[in-house]
Length: 110
Image (tube, rainbow, N blue to C red; front, top):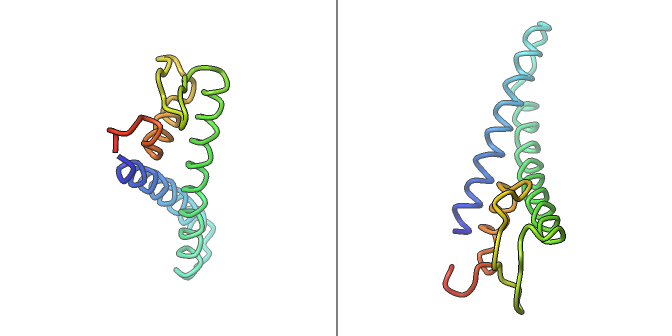
């Protein structure tokens, strides 16, 4: 489960990077400037890393807010999820955080 979640984060980050790089290349070409490939490659690498981090941080914040507002109920030590409200705000991020931390679902979920 954790591997699939990390792969999903990587794919979303790669998509954001590709779209952003494509738009910037269109704008640069529209101006008529010839830019070497190296700046685009550096931009893409940095964007990929920052986007992955952005997604992970947003998932953790969404999970924390969901727990604080009791949209996700935890019980026990270590805490395990007992219930998730169907109308939980930022549900995709909350579920992504849970997939990245399968220990929240209990022992048999690995």
